[in-house]
View: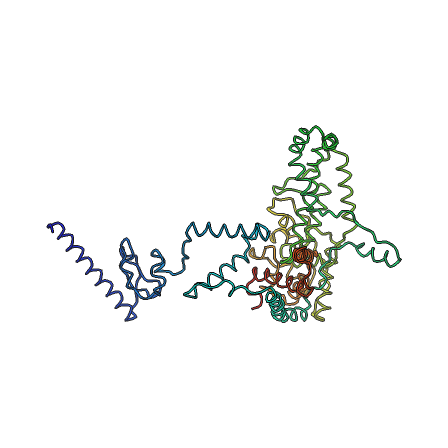
Length: 515
Protein backbone atom coordinates (compact mmCIF):
# COMPACT_ATOMS: atom_id res chain seq x y z
CA UNK A 1 0.00 0.00 0.00
CA UNK A 2 1.45 3.36 -1.00
CA UNK A 3 1.77 6.34 1.33
CA UNK A 4 -0.93 8.16 -0.59
CA UNK A 5 -3.40 5.29 -0.16
CA UNK A 6 -2.57 5.09 3.54
CA UNK A 7 -3.23 8.81 3.97
CA UNK A 8 -6.59 8.48 2.20
CA UNK A 9 -7.54 5.55 4.44
CA UNK A 10 -6.59 7.48 7.60
CA UNK A 11 -8.70 10.47 6.45
CA UNK A 12 -11.72 8.25 5.75
CA UNK A 13 -11.32 6.53 9.14
CA UNK A 14 -11.16 9.90 10.92
CA UNK A 15 -14.21 11.08 9.02
CA UNK A 16 -16.17 7.97 9.99
CA UNK A 17 -15.23 8.41 13.66
CA UNK A 18 -16.37 12.04 13.54
CA UNK A 19 -19.66 11.00 11.94
CA UNK A 20 -20.27 8.35 14.61
CA UNK A 21 -19.55 10.85 17.37
CA UNK A 22 -21.90 13.41 15.86
CA UNK A 23 -24.67 10.84 15.44
CA UNK A 24 -24.28 9.67 19.05
CA UNK A 25 -24.43 13.26 20.32
CA UNK A 26 -27.59 14.04 18.33
CA UNK A 27 -29.32 10.86 19.46
CA UNK A 28 -28.27 11.50 23.10
CA UNK A 29 -29.85 14.94 22.94
CA UNK A 30 -33.11 13.44 21.69
CA UNK A 31 -33.15 10.80 24.45
CA UNK A 32 -32.78 13.55 27.08
CA UNK A 33 -35.71 15.46 25.48
CA UNK A 34 -33.60 18.57 25.12
CA UNK A 35 -34.68 21.27 22.64
CA UNK A 36 -33.27 20.64 19.18
CA UNK A 37 -32.59 23.26 16.53
CA UNK A 38 -32.88 21.57 13.15
CA UNK A 39 -30.62 22.53 10.29
CA UNK A 40 -29.36 21.04 7.06
CA UNK A 41 -26.03 19.21 7.60
CA UNK A 42 -24.31 17.99 4.44
CA UNK A 43 -23.76 14.21 4.52
CA UNK A 44 -26.60 13.46 6.96
CA UNK A 45 -30.29 12.57 6.76
CA UNK A 46 -32.93 12.30 9.45
CA UNK A 47 -35.26 9.32 9.70
CA UNK A 48 -38.84 10.37 9.00
CA UNK A 49 -40.23 8.12 11.78
CA UNK A 50 -37.81 8.25 14.71
CA UNK A 51 -35.82 11.37 13.67
CA UNK A 52 -32.51 9.51 14.19
CA UNK A 53 -29.53 11.07 12.38
CA UNK A 54 -28.15 8.80 9.66
CA UNK A 55 -25.02 9.16 7.56
CA UNK A 56 -25.74 9.63 3.86
CA UNK A 57 -23.22 10.11 1.04
CA UNK A 58 -24.14 8.94 -2.44
CA UNK A 59 -25.98 5.76 -1.49
CA UNK A 60 -28.09 4.29 1.30
CA UNK A 61 -25.69 1.55 2.40
CA UNK A 62 -25.34 3.04 5.93
CA UNK A 63 -29.12 2.84 6.36
CA UNK A 64 -29.36 -0.92 5.86
CA UNK A 65 -28.99 -1.60 9.59
CA UNK A 66 -31.60 0.98 10.61
CA UNK A 67 -34.56 -1.08 11.88
CA UNK A 68 -37.09 1.71 12.46
CA UNK A 69 -38.83 1.01 9.16
CA UNK A 70 -40.15 -2.55 8.51
CA UNK A 71 -37.76 -4.75 6.55
CA UNK A 72 -40.24 -5.12 3.68
CA UNK A 73 -39.60 -1.52 2.68
CA UNK A 74 -35.82 -1.34 3.15
CA UNK A 75 -34.95 -2.63 -0.30
CA UNK A 76 -37.72 -0.79 -2.17
CA UNK A 77 -35.84 2.16 -3.55
CA UNK A 78 -34.34 5.61 -3.09
CA UNK A 79 -33.73 7.79 -0.06
CA UNK A 80 -37.32 9.02 0.07
CA UNK A 81 -38.47 5.48 0.98
CA UNK A 82 -36.51 5.67 4.24
CA UNK A 83 -37.52 9.19 5.14
CA UNK A 84 -41.15 9.16 4.11
CA UNK A 85 -42.66 5.79 3.35
CA UNK A 86 -45.41 7.17 1.06
CA UNK A 87 -43.91 7.01 -2.41
CA UNK A 88 -45.34 4.24 -4.56
CA UNK A 89 -43.19 1.74 -6.43
CA UNK A 90 -42.46 2.54 -10.08
CA UNK A 91 -44.10 -0.02 -12.35
CA UNK A 92 -41.91 -1.50 -15.08
CA UNK A 93 -42.80 -0.87 -18.70
CA UNK A 94 -43.42 -4.54 -19.45
CA UNK A 95 -46.00 -4.70 -16.66
CA UNK A 96 -47.73 -1.58 -17.99
CA UNK A 97 -47.83 -3.09 -21.47
CA UNK A 98 -49.30 -6.30 -20.07
CA UNK A 99 -52.04 -4.32 -18.28
CA UNK A 100 -52.74 -2.41 -21.49
CA UNK A 101 -53.08 -5.74 -23.31
CA UNK A 102 -55.56 -7.11 -20.77
CA UNK A 103 -57.67 -3.94 -20.76
CA UNK A 104 -57.81 -3.87 -24.56
CA UNK A 105 -58.90 -7.50 -24.72
CA UNK A 106 -61.57 -6.85 -22.08
CA UNK A 107 -62.98 -3.82 -23.92
CA UNK A 108 -63.08 -5.67 -27.24
CA UNK A 109 -64.82 -8.72 -25.75
CA UNK A 110 -67.32 -7.08 -23.38
CA UNK A 111 -67.70 -3.88 -25.46
CA UNK A 112 -67.80 -1.27 -22.70
CA UNK A 113 -66.98 2.38 -23.51
CA UNK A 114 -63.31 3.28 -23.97
CA UNK A 115 -63.74 5.99 -21.33
CA UNK A 116 -64.29 3.32 -18.66
CA UNK A 117 -60.48 3.04 -18.42
CA UNK A 118 -60.39 6.55 -16.94
CA UNK A 119 -63.40 5.96 -14.72
CA UNK A 120 -62.82 6.90 -11.08
CA UNK A 121 -64.68 3.82 -9.86
CA UNK A 122 -62.51 1.39 -11.83
CA UNK A 123 -59.44 3.13 -10.47
CA UNK A 124 -60.67 2.66 -6.91
CA UNK A 125 -61.49 -1.02 -7.49
CA UNK A 126 -58.02 -1.77 -8.88
CA UNK A 127 -56.35 0.20 -6.10
CA UNK A 128 -58.31 -1.75 -3.49
CA UNK A 129 -57.28 -5.03 -5.14
CA UNK A 130 -53.63 -3.95 -5.01
CA UNK A 131 -54.00 -3.03 -1.33
CA UNK A 132 -55.52 -6.41 -0.50
CA UNK A 133 -52.75 -8.23 -2.39
CA UNK A 134 -50.08 -6.39 -0.37
CA UNK A 135 -51.52 -7.73 2.89
CA UNK A 136 -50.71 -11.34 2.08
CA UNK A 137 -47.35 -13.06 1.53
CA UNK A 138 -48.64 -15.61 -0.97
CA UNK A 139 -50.48 -14.73 -4.19
CA UNK A 140 -54.20 -14.01 -3.82
CA UNK A 141 -56.78 -15.74 -5.99
CA UNK A 142 -58.86 -13.12 -7.81
CA UNK A 143 -61.99 -15.24 -7.47
CA UNK A 144 -61.67 -14.95 -3.70
CA UNK A 145 -61.98 -11.15 -4.00
CA UNK A 146 -64.64 -10.80 -6.69
CA UNK A 147 -68.25 -11.39 -5.70
CA UNK A 148 -71.20 -12.82 -7.60
CA UNK A 149 -73.86 -10.84 -9.46
CA UNK A 150 -76.54 -11.56 -6.86
CA UNK A 151 -74.28 -10.31 -4.10
CA UNK A 152 -73.79 -6.98 -5.89
CA UNK A 153 -77.54 -6.60 -6.49
CA UNK A 154 -78.30 -7.30 -2.83
CA UNK A 155 -75.54 -4.99 -1.63
CA UNK A 156 -76.82 -2.15 -3.83
CA UNK A 157 -80.12 -2.28 -1.96
CA UNK A 158 -78.32 -2.56 1.39
CA UNK A 159 -76.08 0.42 0.60
CA UNK A 160 -79.08 2.43 -0.55
CA UNK A 161 -80.84 1.67 2.74
CA UNK A 162 -77.76 2.75 4.71
CA UNK A 163 -77.71 6.05 2.83
CA UNK A 164 -81.44 6.52 3.39
CA UNK A 165 -81.03 6.07 7.13
CA UNK A 166 -78.12 8.54 7.14
CA UNK A 167 -80.12 11.01 5.05
CA UNK A 168 -83.28 10.59 7.11
CA UNK A 169 -82.12 12.82 9.96
CA UNK A 170 -81.09 15.55 7.53
CA UNK A 171 -84.46 15.44 5.74
CA UNK A 172 -86.38 15.51 9.01
CA UNK A 173 -84.47 18.60 10.14
CA UNK A 174 -85.08 20.29 6.77
CA UNK A 175 -88.78 19.44 6.81
CA UNK A 176 -89.20 20.82 10.33
CA UNK A 177 -87.38 24.00 9.29
CA UNK A 178 -89.58 24.37 6.19
CA UNK A 179 -86.68 24.16 3.75
CA UNK A 180 -87.38 20.79 2.12
CA UNK A 181 -88.33 21.19 -1.55
CA UNK A 182 -90.51 18.41 -2.96
CA UNK A 183 -91.59 19.88 -6.31
CA UNK A 184 -88.57 21.84 -7.55
CA UNK A 185 -90.05 23.18 -10.80
CA UNK A 186 -90.98 26.86 -10.35
CA UNK A 187 -90.12 27.89 -13.89
CA UNK A 188 -92.61 25.84 -15.86
CA UNK A 189 -94.90 26.04 -18.87
CA UNK A 190 -98.47 26.86 -17.83
CA UNK A 191 -99.74 24.68 -20.69
CA UNK A 192 -97.85 21.63 -19.45
CA UNK A 193 -100.97 19.81 -18.26
CA UNK A 194 -103.11 20.57 -21.32
CA UNK A 195 -102.74 17.01 -22.65
CA UNK A 196 -104.41 15.64 -19.53
CA UNK A 197 -107.47 17.83 -20.15
CA UNK A 198 -107.62 16.65 -23.77
CA UNK A 199 -107.41 13.01 -22.69
CA UNK A 200 -110.14 13.58 -20.09
CA UNK A 201 -112.40 14.61 -23.00
CA UNK A 202 -111.74 11.24 -24.72
CA UNK A 203 -109.52 12.66 -27.42
CA UNK A 204 -105.97 11.97 -28.62
CA UNK A 205 -103.22 13.80 -26.77
CA UNK A 206 -101.05 16.26 -28.63
CA UNK A 207 -97.66 14.91 -29.71
CA UNK A 208 -94.46 16.87 -30.13
CA UNK A 209 -92.49 15.79 -33.17
CA UNK A 210 -89.34 17.53 -32.03
CA UNK A 211 -88.10 19.04 -28.80
CA UNK A 212 -85.21 21.50 -29.16
CA UNK A 213 -83.74 23.32 -26.19
CA UNK A 214 -81.83 26.56 -26.28
CA UNK A 215 -78.55 24.79 -25.62
CA UNK A 216 -78.89 22.30 -28.47
CA UNK A 217 -80.33 24.87 -30.90
CA UNK A 218 -77.50 27.33 -30.29
CA UNK A 219 -74.89 24.57 -30.51
CA UNK A 220 -76.45 23.39 -33.79
CA UNK A 221 -76.22 26.84 -35.35
CA UNK A 222 -72.68 27.32 -34.11
CA UNK A 223 -71.64 24.02 -35.68
CA UNK A 224 -73.26 25.06 -39.00
CA UNK A 225 -71.37 28.35 -38.95
CA UNK A 226 -68.07 26.54 -38.37
CA UNK A 227 -68.51 23.66 -40.84
CA UNK A 228 -70.61 25.18 -43.66
CA UNK A 229 -67.68 25.75 -46.02
CA UNK A 230 -66.29 22.27 -45.42
CA UNK A 231 -69.73 20.76 -46.06
CA UNK A 232 -70.09 22.72 -49.33
CA UNK A 233 -66.66 21.55 -50.46
CA UNK A 234 -67.50 17.90 -49.79
CA UNK A 235 -70.93 18.03 -51.46
CA UNK A 236 -69.60 19.90 -54.51
CA UNK A 237 -67.13 17.06 -55.11
CA UNK A 238 -69.98 14.55 -55.45
CA UNK A 239 -71.73 14.77 -58.85
CA UNK A 240 -74.79 12.81 -57.69
CA UNK A 241 -75.57 15.18 -54.80
CA UNK A 242 -77.56 17.65 -56.89
CA UNK A 243 -80.41 18.10 -54.42
CA UNK A 244 -77.99 18.57 -51.51
CA UNK A 245 -76.09 21.23 -53.47
CA UNK A 246 -79.26 23.22 -54.01
CA UNK A 247 -80.22 23.02 -50.33
CA UNK A 248 -76.84 23.96 -48.93
CA UNK A 249 -76.46 26.90 -51.31
CA UNK A 250 -79.69 28.35 -49.94
CA UNK A 251 -78.14 28.67 -46.47
CA UNK A 252 -77.26 32.29 -45.75
CA UNK A 253 -74.13 32.18 -43.59
CA UNK A 254 -74.56 35.83 -42.53
CA UNK A 255 -78.03 35.04 -41.19
CA UNK A 256 -76.61 32.07 -39.31
CA UNK A 257 -74.04 34.31 -37.65
CA UNK A 258 -76.75 36.79 -36.65
CA UNK A 259 -78.87 33.98 -35.18
CA UNK A 260 -75.88 32.69 -33.20
CA UNK A 261 -75.38 36.19 -31.79
CA UNK A 262 -79.10 36.45 -31.00
CA UNK A 263 -79.30 33.09 -29.21
CA UNK A 264 -75.95 33.23 -27.39
CA UNK A 265 -77.39 34.85 -24.21
CA UNK A 266 -80.16 32.23 -24.13
CA UNK A 267 -77.51 29.50 -24.13
CA UNK A 268 -75.59 31.27 -21.36
CA UNK A 269 -78.71 31.80 -19.27
CA UNK A 270 -79.85 28.18 -19.71
CA UNK A 271 -76.49 26.92 -18.48
CA UNK A 272 -76.46 29.33 -15.55
CA UNK A 273 -79.91 28.61 -14.10
CA UNK A 274 -79.63 24.83 -14.45
CA UNK A 275 -77.14 24.40 -11.63
CA UNK A 276 -78.18 21.62 -9.31
CA UNK A 277 -75.96 21.90 -6.23
CA UNK A 278 -75.96 25.64 -5.43
CA UNK A 279 -78.77 28.17 -4.84
CA UNK A 280 -80.22 29.26 -8.16
CA UNK A 281 -83.61 30.91 -7.52
CA UNK A 282 -82.08 34.41 -7.47
CA UNK A 283 -80.55 33.77 -10.90
CA UNK A 284 -84.02 34.10 -12.48
CA UNK A 285 -83.81 37.84 -11.69
CA UNK A 286 -80.45 38.04 -13.44
CA UNK A 287 -81.45 35.81 -16.36
CA UNK A 288 -84.73 37.54 -17.29
CA UNK A 289 -83.21 41.02 -17.04
CA UNK A 290 -80.32 39.85 -19.22
CA UNK A 291 -82.63 38.49 -21.91
CA UNK A 292 -84.91 41.54 -21.89
CA UNK A 293 -81.99 43.94 -22.26
CA UNK A 294 -80.53 41.75 -24.99
CA UNK A 295 -83.73 41.58 -27.05
CA UNK A 296 -84.28 45.33 -26.66
CA UNK A 297 -80.68 45.98 -27.81
CA UNK A 298 -79.86 47.70 -24.52
CA UNK A 299 -77.38 45.08 -23.37
CA UNK A 300 -73.68 45.78 -22.92
CA UNK A 301 -70.60 43.60 -23.17
CA UNK A 302 -67.90 43.09 -20.55
CA UNK A 303 -66.19 46.33 -21.61
CA UNK A 304 -69.36 48.38 -21.13
CA UNK A 305 -70.04 48.76 -24.87
CA UNK A 306 -73.52 48.31 -26.33
CA UNK A 307 -74.16 45.00 -28.09
CA UNK A 308 -75.63 45.49 -31.56
CA UNK A 309 -77.76 42.66 -32.94
CA UNK A 310 -77.34 42.62 -36.70
CA UNK A 311 -80.40 41.77 -38.75
CA UNK A 312 -79.02 41.27 -42.25
CA UNK A 313 -81.99 39.07 -43.08
CA UNK A 314 -85.64 39.91 -42.45
CA UNK A 315 -86.17 36.51 -40.84
CA UNK A 316 -83.77 37.37 -38.01
CA UNK A 317 -85.71 40.48 -37.05
CA UNK A 318 -88.94 38.48 -37.11
CA UNK A 319 -87.35 35.80 -34.94
CA UNK A 320 -86.22 38.40 -32.40
CA UNK A 321 -89.72 39.88 -32.15
CA UNK A 322 -91.13 36.39 -31.60
CA UNK A 323 -88.61 35.80 -28.83
CA UNK A 324 -89.64 39.03 -27.09
CA UNK A 325 -93.30 38.09 -27.31
CA UNK A 326 -92.61 34.55 -26.14
CA UNK A 327 -90.56 35.73 -23.15
CA UNK A 328 -93.24 38.18 -21.99
CA UNK A 329 -96.06 35.67 -22.56
CA UNK A 330 -94.81 32.51 -20.88
CA UNK A 331 -92.86 34.06 -18.02
CA UNK A 332 -93.59 36.54 -15.26
CA UNK A 333 -91.69 37.15 -12.04
CA UNK A 334 -92.93 35.28 -9.02
CA UNK A 335 -92.56 37.02 -5.65
CA UNK A 336 -90.14 34.29 -4.62
CA UNK A 337 -87.85 35.08 -7.56
CA UNK A 338 -87.45 38.70 -6.54
CA UNK A 339 -87.32 37.86 -2.82
CA UNK A 340 -84.45 35.47 -3.51
CA UNK A 341 -82.65 38.25 -5.38
CA UNK A 342 -83.39 40.66 -2.53
CA UNK A 343 -81.79 38.28 -0.02
CA UNK A 344 -78.66 37.91 -2.13
CA UNK A 345 -76.02 40.43 -0.96
CA UNK A 346 -75.09 41.25 -4.55
CA UNK A 347 -78.65 42.03 -5.74
CA UNK A 348 -80.40 43.09 -2.52
CA UNK A 349 -81.44 46.56 -3.78
CA UNK A 350 -83.11 45.16 -6.91
CA UNK A 351 -81.53 47.86 -9.02
CA UNK A 352 -83.01 46.52 -12.27
CA UNK A 353 -86.57 46.19 -10.93
CA UNK A 354 -89.03 49.08 -11.04
CA UNK A 355 -90.27 50.81 -7.89
CA UNK A 356 -93.54 48.87 -7.88
CA UNK A 357 -91.85 45.46 -8.06
CA UNK A 358 -89.29 46.52 -5.47
CA UNK A 359 -92.02 47.64 -3.08
CA UNK A 360 -94.10 44.49 -3.59
CA UNK A 361 -91.03 42.39 -2.84
CA UNK A 362 -90.34 44.26 0.43
CA UNK A 363 -93.96 43.73 1.50
CA UNK A 364 -93.76 40.04 0.54
CA UNK A 365 -90.61 39.47 2.61
CA UNK A 366 -92.16 41.09 5.68
CA UNK A 367 -95.37 39.12 5.25
CA UNK A 368 -93.46 35.85 4.93
CA UNK A 369 -91.53 36.55 8.11
CA UNK A 370 -94.73 37.37 9.96
CA UNK A 371 -96.47 34.30 8.56
CA UNK A 372 -93.62 31.90 9.35
CA UNK A 373 -92.49 33.23 12.71
CA UNK A 374 -95.36 35.35 14.04
CA UNK A 375 -95.35 39.05 14.80
CA UNK A 376 -91.70 40.03 15.03
CA UNK A 377 -92.35 43.78 14.93
CA UNK A 378 -91.69 43.93 11.19
CA UNK A 379 -93.11 47.21 9.93
CA UNK A 380 -94.46 48.28 6.56
CA UNK A 381 -92.67 51.51 5.86
CA UNK A 382 -91.91 53.66 2.89
CA UNK A 383 -89.98 52.01 0.10
CA UNK A 384 -86.40 52.74 -0.80
CA UNK A 385 -85.82 54.06 -4.29
CA UNK A 386 -82.59 53.68 -6.22
CA UNK A 387 -81.72 55.46 -9.43
CA UNK A 388 -80.59 53.27 -12.30
CA UNK A 389 -76.79 53.04 -12.25
CA UNK A 390 -74.60 54.22 -15.06
CA UNK A 391 -73.21 51.61 -17.43
CA UNK A 392 -69.91 50.10 -16.36
CA UNK A 393 -67.58 47.25 -17.16
CA UNK A 394 -68.19 43.77 -15.74
CA UNK A 395 -66.50 40.37 -15.79
CA UNK A 396 -69.44 37.97 -15.79
CA UNK A 397 -73.16 38.13 -16.43
CA UNK A 398 -73.79 37.94 -12.69
CA UNK A 399 -71.59 41.00 -12.13
CA UNK A 400 -73.58 43.00 -14.68
CA UNK A 401 -76.69 43.02 -12.50
CA UNK A 402 -75.01 43.58 -9.14
CA UNK A 403 -76.09 46.56 -7.07
CA UNK A 404 -73.92 49.68 -7.22
CA UNK A 405 -71.31 50.20 -4.54
CA UNK A 406 -72.73 50.93 -1.09
CA UNK A 407 -70.99 54.30 -0.90
CA UNK A 408 -72.70 55.41 -4.12
CA UNK A 409 -76.09 53.84 -3.47
CA UNK A 410 -76.57 55.00 0.10
CA UNK A 411 -76.73 58.59 -1.09
CA UNK A 412 -79.84 57.74 -3.14
CA UNK A 413 -81.48 55.60 -0.44
CA UNK A 414 -84.29 57.59 1.18
CA UNK A 415 -86.37 56.40 4.12
CA UNK A 416 -88.57 57.96 6.79
CA UNK A 417 -88.48 55.12 9.27
CA UNK A 418 -88.19 55.81 12.97
CA UNK A 419 -87.52 52.21 13.89
CA UNK A 420 -85.47 50.04 11.54
CA UNK A 421 -86.48 46.38 11.17
CA UNK A 422 -84.24 43.54 10.00
CA UNK A 423 -84.93 44.19 6.35
CA UNK A 424 -84.09 47.87 6.73
CA UNK A 425 -80.85 47.11 8.53
CA UNK A 426 -79.92 44.53 5.93
CA UNK A 427 -80.57 46.95 3.05
CA UNK A 428 -78.59 49.75 4.66
CA UNK A 429 -75.59 47.77 5.90
CA UNK A 430 -72.27 47.75 4.06
CA UNK A 431 -71.51 44.32 2.58
CA UNK A 432 -67.98 43.05 3.06
CA UNK A 433 -66.17 42.05 -0.12
CA UNK A 434 -65.77 38.44 1.05
CA UNK A 435 -69.57 37.95 0.92
CA UNK A 436 -69.94 39.23 -2.65
CA UNK A 437 -69.81 35.79 -4.22
CA UNK A 438 -72.24 33.59 -6.22
CA UNK A 439 -73.57 31.64 -3.21
CA UNK A 440 -75.55 33.77 -0.73
CA UNK A 441 -75.54 31.03 1.92
CA UNK A 442 -72.06 32.03 3.08
CA UNK A 443 -73.37 35.48 4.02
CA UNK A 444 -76.43 34.19 5.86
CA UNK A 445 -74.48 31.57 7.76
CA UNK A 446 -72.21 34.31 9.05
CA UNK A 447 -75.07 36.76 9.81
CA UNK A 448 -77.75 34.41 11.15
CA UNK A 449 -77.33 35.82 14.66
CA UNK A 450 -77.67 39.42 13.48
CA UNK A 451 -80.62 38.70 11.13
CA UNK A 452 -82.25 35.53 12.54
CA UNK A 453 -85.58 35.90 10.71
CA UNK A 454 -84.15 36.91 7.35
CA UNK A 455 -81.59 34.09 7.59
CA UNK A 456 -84.39 31.53 8.08
CA UNK A 457 -86.37 33.01 5.20
CA UNK A 458 -83.24 32.93 3.00
CA UNK A 459 -82.72 29.26 3.80
CA UNK A 460 -86.37 28.63 2.96
CA UNK A 461 -86.21 30.39 -0.42
CA UNK A 462 -82.84 29.09 -1.54
CA UNK A 463 -84.00 25.50 -1.03
CA UNK A 464 -86.11 26.05 -4.17
CA UNK A 465 -84.14 25.53 -7.40
CA UNK A 466 -84.91 27.75 -10.37
CA UNK A 467 -85.51 24.79 -12.69
CA UNK A 468 -86.17 21.08 -12.51
CA UNK A 469 -82.82 20.33 -14.22
CA UNK A 470 -81.58 18.41 -11.17
CA UNK A 471 -84.55 16.03 -11.29
CA UNK A 472 -84.35 15.71 -15.08
CA UNK A 473 -80.70 14.70 -14.79
CA UNK A 474 -81.78 11.79 -12.60
CA UNK A 475 -84.17 10.64 -15.34
CA UNK A 476 -81.31 10.91 -17.83
CA UNK A 477 -79.22 8.74 -15.51
CA UNK A 478 -82.04 6.19 -15.50
CA UNK A 479 -81.64 5.96 -19.26
CA UNK A 480 -78.00 5.01 -18.73
CA UNK A 481 -78.88 2.35 -16.18
CA UNK A 482 -81.68 0.72 -18.18
CA UNK A 483 -80.50 -0.32 -21.64
CA UNK A 484 -80.73 -3.33 -23.95
CA UNK A 485 -78.13 -5.22 -21.93
CA UNK A 486 -79.84 -4.47 -18.62
CA UNK A 487 -83.52 -4.39 -19.53
CA UNK A 488 -84.64 -6.90 -16.89
CA UNK A 489 -83.52 -4.96 -13.82
CA UNK A 490 -85.92 -4.95 -10.92
CA UNK A 491 -87.53 -1.48 -10.45
CA UNK A 492 -86.42 -1.46 -6.81
CA UNK A 493 -82.85 -2.16 -7.93
CA UNK A 494 -82.97 0.67 -10.48
CA UNK A 495 -84.24 3.05 -7.79
CA UNK A 496 -81.47 1.91 -5.44
CA UNK A 497 -78.78 2.37 -8.13
CA UNK A 498 -79.94 5.90 -8.95
CA UNK A 499 -80.12 6.82 -5.27
CA UNK A 500 -76.64 5.47 -4.48
CA UNK A 501 -75.26 7.22 -7.58
CA UNK A 502 -76.74 10.54 -6.47
CA UNK A 503 -75.40 10.21 -2.93
CA UNK A 504 -71.96 9.17 -4.19
CA UNK A 505 -71.73 12.31 -6.34
CA UNK A 506 -72.78 14.42 -3.37
CA UNK A 507 -70.16 12.78 -1.15
CA UNK A 508 -67.48 13.49 -3.75
CA UNK A 509 -68.31 17.19 -3.49
CA UNK A 510 -68.87 17.18 0.27
CA UNK A 511 -67.22 14.25 2.11
CA UNK A 512 -68.74 15.52 5.40
CA UNK A 513 -72.32 15.36 4.13
CA UNK A 514 -73.49 13.00 6.87
CA UNK A 515 -71.23 14.28 9.64
